[in-house]
Image (cartoon, rainbow, N blue to C red; front, side, top):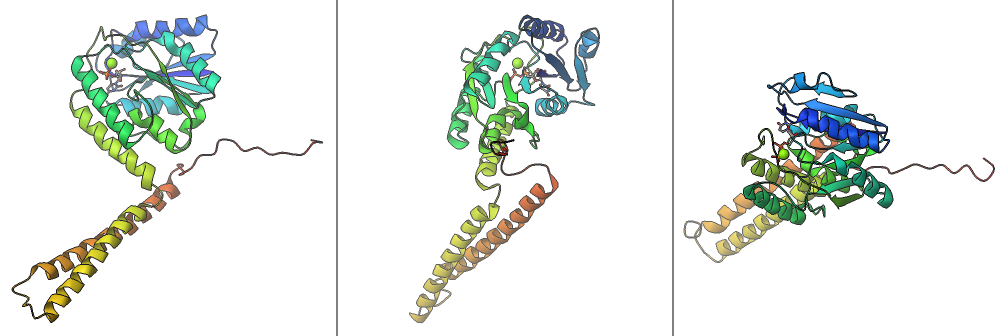
Length: 313
Ligand code: UDP
Ligand code: MG
């Protein structure tokens, strides 16, 4: 079974056409399918337009929580073995669904991300997206050309213990790669937005960048933040110690403290910073332990568990 999850926010002129495009391709391909529209607090007639559509699961969020939250809500109730996500503004083409499924199955990937090689967006959007993709390639190294493309397919188990928040939906492949899931990509169609307006502006670039730093940190130090903070703290303490020795040598060489205030000041500065960093690292360790203790999330992910009962069983 496949579940198609679509976050929707004020898309009154797109929802019906999108629904029928998805339904048609699923019927044509004889898929066992469910369509889930997650209404992210729409204030236009989106809800009214969808009332007569079936088969459709319609989730309504109480207010506008953002695309990531809407996606998470849809994914959590999806029953399919495969979960496909896409935008609700008709920019992604439901006709690409079979392509995603084939690419996933043929290569035994856990995730296949769409790549909008020929994007139908404004020059500005294409430019910022290029820069973002370049940075992501350097910082989080997910080896995906177009992680911002919503059209993706996932095996259901990818989401075990994965909670999406902030603007994180663009980094799902990166987060999954950290856990060892295999990620592929395939070139998909992209269409210009005909009806309705884009819901994003330049602020997204900054939020995306901050999220990227968070993913990078999570990738490297999620299990032992003390490794980074503690090491930096030790280096500062070392520098502080060095400056301390320098001050003592100067003192014994007869230099007056008032003439050379710099080394003792540096000593105090580095020792305080070093201690603070170390304590900060210890506190982050406690936070991480609390995190893994109170959520379903684990720093690792098991692909399968096989039991061999021998030849006779
Ligand atoms: N969306 C949403 N909640 C939001 C913003 C957007 O559910 O707060 C949906 C929107 O309706 C669309 C998809 O997310 O289905 C992508 O949004 P949009 O097309 O505005 O993004 P763009 O293509 O401009 O990057
Ligand atoms: Mg769009």
